[in-house]
Length: 138
Image 1 (cartoon, rainbow, N blue to C red):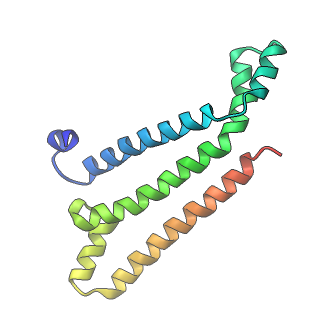
Image 2: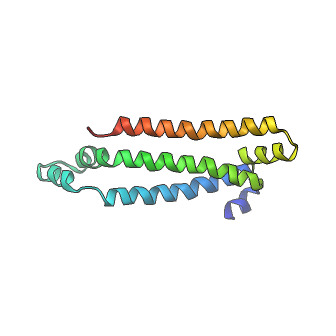
């Protein structure tokens, strides 16, 4: 509501609100990933005389990166789905176009919007799978 107060209702305040909300969620999930990591590699590096940056680069990031990417891309997919729902109730974006096309009985446009929505979701899933394979520690 504070964002809407300063910027007036529209697409930009909705995007900022979704971004801030998901930034908090990703931060919380990332903190939980770090809390639940195996402390063994970090301890081994510390006992071998590694500094803080070396512990971060070789002990923490390799363990946490696959889950970080998984959560980040999952929240991105959730935001895509949320924009459709929020737009459907009047905030703009894909959902608004979907609602307008439905109300004017333009079913070819509705089919095209649904197709683009499915392409977005599948692209995020494929990108997520590729990046998780890329950062997975052998």
